[in-house]
Image (cartoon, rainbow, N blue to C red; front, side):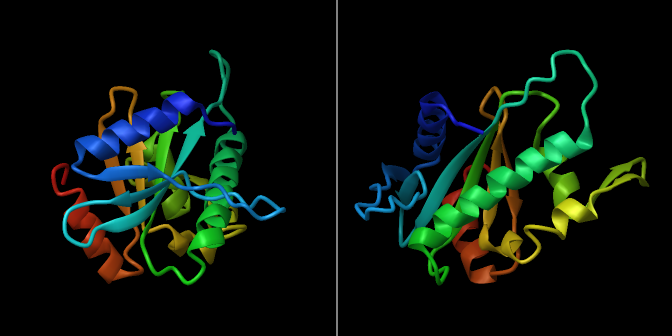
Length: 180
């Protein structure tokens, strides 16, 4: 889904409020115009990571919400972000942070956690099996993103760390200690 410049401004404002310095990542000069992450972020100490902003825009009006529609949208955004990170960080030498902004209250950090867990749980009961989304197209790539940040409409952040690389998690935990 296309993101708006307003979402990138919001993300930069959030990163700055966290004591970090976001800089626009220069676009590729190659003829193929590889897509790159939105920001290169630095901070106190040796803090350095890449940040991509993805906007979740889904218009459901007041109608029913299909799980396939929501999770296909999230997977598409996730796959594009992974391609952007890999274009400049192929060996994953610095952390990759995906900052999500949602424009629909029904798609939020809990929706993402359902995807990450591969199922929707309600009161401990599995209500929907999401394995085809979680273990399908992004099975191996899921670990390429070290931190997912969901910004609510009031800019309240929610952090979902990927523990695959403890060294990178430690760096990101330090970078966002204000919120944790």
